[in-house]
Image (cartoon, rainbow, N blue to C red; front, top):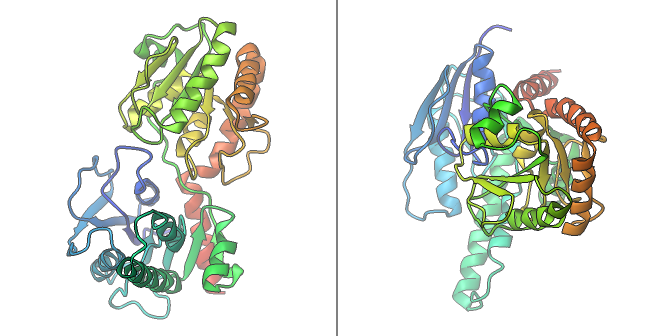
Length: 382
């Protein structure tokens, strides 16, 4: 395929934290750049970020900040980004679809095509945020009604403008169709892209870097946010605490925050890609105890790192793992501890699950998503 000119609209600068909401947009941009395309990423001005990947131009978009966080500000960013889209662009990618239309100058009749990724329903997020006490006055209710109406109008505009809508959760198309009366067939599905983490060349090298014994079972729990008291970390610690008497030499590595002290628990507190990659590479088992909403990209990171993965049933994986994950019978830490103990006691089972997990993780490669986009765009012109 001949090189193309592609503009990507992102939420922020190149992320250092793999959990950053802007990570998917930059993963898409990186995949296009690796393919040899001319890629620019438009993102809000300000904010610290990581190094811009090779082959990508980062363009800061200035926006007025009169009501920080309000729907009108998000829409202003969309409009400002749209006006900086190149007239020579062959493709516009917006991740996430967000609020407000781009109205890119020179764009008409679907040329260039606009692909938008739906990561959540903004209106539903607005409703969840407003479910707080203390907003019972008439003025508060009026302001909430007005803001909700703006969110609904602006989200509809963003969705309606896109030529191709792709959701990363199989449940989203039906929910969007119900909320906005879009035909189900207008919204496709695509697994979220997860960039490949840098990691040491071997498990022994990773354990050496973390001063871990090479001959003991090790579990790893990535923290979705830097909170030592997060539900994810607390449930993982409780799970590990229950099985440690059976495996005295076992270790639990918590990466992304500083875990409270516990026997056998160590912390890798930095929240950058190399730290997550190092911790995952050192483990035999990825332990995902739930307690956070949405898709956890580090579950895919664990699968790629050669870990067997165990998780509670509430942990969401967009693509059915088909036997690649050892699911606990319930979200109870006791059930998860039993599943973890089975894995620690059976290295052959760990190797089998790790092999299946590695194959299942290929669905989340960013280059796979490019093929989905290509097929979707080709279908628009039939």
